[in-house]
Image (cartoon, rainbow, N blue to C red; front, side):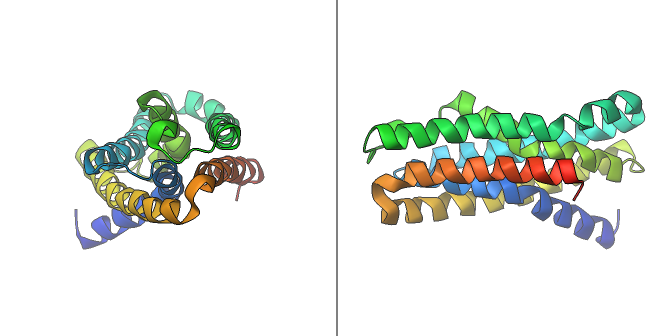
Length: 193
């Protein structure tokens, strides 16, 4: 592992963390009084899944590649359904009641779904790191996790600040962001961009 290896891993982290950053921003807007521990949980869940998916992709490359290619065509659909569901629920709750409190916070199960939905496309990174040995793949995943964690902490913090400025509209806006990310992942996956 040389300097270039770490630069590539950091770039993977930045590229993969953009969806998670947007969802973290939406979560911060949705939960304006989020405590530091909860912020770490949000960022940690995204970091975990952003690291796990490339490792699962690496394992698929080294074991069941033919099955992985068959599954990869469903990734855009899965991400769209999961993010549209969570985003739609946030929009509904934001419209249904004027939510100026933290009772609109996404629960842990919802956070896990967000983590999976925003990281499922990272499975394809397993193809890119397929030539790495296991230790290199693991180190790359750890670097991705660290970068994702930092970016998502910033996203949650920024979301809290914007959430305070947007007041009751933050829940609706956060839901719209999630639905848009789902559509973006779907279109990107279908068109092969």
